[in-house]
Image (cartoon, rainbow, N blue to C red; front, side, top):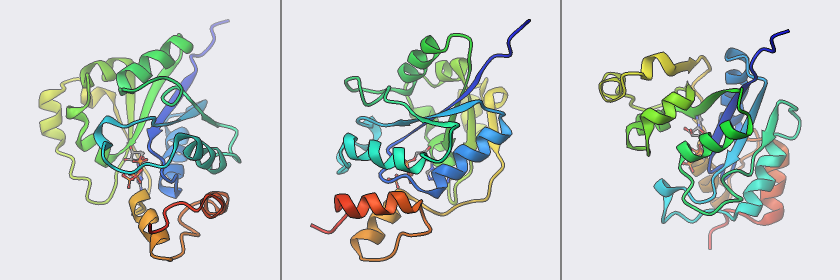
Length: 204
Ligand code: ATP
């Protein structure tokens, strides 16, 4: 009997910290794209975010682990934290495809990431390895016609994830914490508790 190919979502991010915007993207994408699992891939060192103070890999792995702990479809992947930088998405995808040779891959991202997609390393090759699942973000400014001129295969490989626009960002949550404002209801309680335990995002 033919086995239907596994459908795997890959969700990369700094996740500093993970929040409900991330969880909604992963969950709605899993439903709409009929994914069997979503691999959450915390970034080791993001080439586009150099210069920003980023929480250690060990602590971000704990935060993401806590955020996804109640969903058996979500799994933590160490593919970008166990190997040396740089961690270009195309390399990550090829490693995962080698681990799951018959799987169909879907790379999940917010609209702000799609807006900068043409500047990523090997975007056309990325589209040949994986389809994209994109959830819009407020103010994401996607010029789809410009992107499509540059990447003609994009429309065939792009799946819009139909989800509410969620105006939550990790930057805002770090600022809220530094300013002593509540972050509860923006992310799972387990993540809030770990941020407290680790003393993250306090003003120096
Ligand atoms: P920061 O504010 O530090 O840049 P972030 O909240 O954008 O962080 P990332 O870890 O950089 O979080 O994001 C990982 C992925 O999740 C990216 O593709 C990003 O576009 C997407 N994403 C993050 N927040 C949202 C949201 N509220 N709605 C839709 N997509 C989101």
